[in-house]
Length: 295
Image (cartoon, rainbow, N blue to C red; front, side):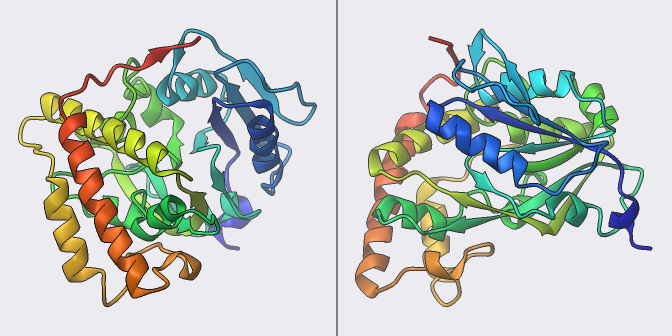
């Protein structure tokens, strides 16, 4: 019998902030998972628009509007040993929960990072750029030079480890998942990659949205640098140069075939966006990382 056949119960928590159409998509995401009676599905509505559901617990939370606040609120309602955090803009396969437990999990492991694959089905340049660069690749995050990290867009956490770390740091708008993973390791818990527990992720659809996201990411990295002596954010220009030297012959790990640059012209457009986002990073590094209150 493989490990998945006798896997433990899992609570799936999806933080959400959007409109009614996006709320319905988030509910569909949860319903697409193959679950068991002992599993638990929670949609944490951080903006008060999601409809009630019979098969999903819709948890409405007020106050701070941030993924950290929503995830913590959902985890507080979890009744399982394991909590799976998924972002509302991911597309998990039906067998995701079983894939996480296809191999045994050592007792010292506090979190399992499932892979995230960027998809470029969107017609916009920004969507294809995000998918091709795949900023959320867990394989890349696992090799972070300072300390392994993971994105909470697809992260399975042992409840005991989550409680010992006191969850995600609230009051910030970015970098909270990296901070959580680093604190988890400081407490002695392991962070392990599960490349077969993969979800698809669609990136921002407009360049304006991408620029705002990049400023937030940079503000989060500056915040992490203040919290962790020895961590120095790598300049975007250096990352872009490394991508040009290493990623042109072969696509970055976790990039779907349809997300790769289709032509030399699009490759040049991607390079131009690298420059634009490098400038946005310089701005973001000087911005506060405070989350916003719910309107």
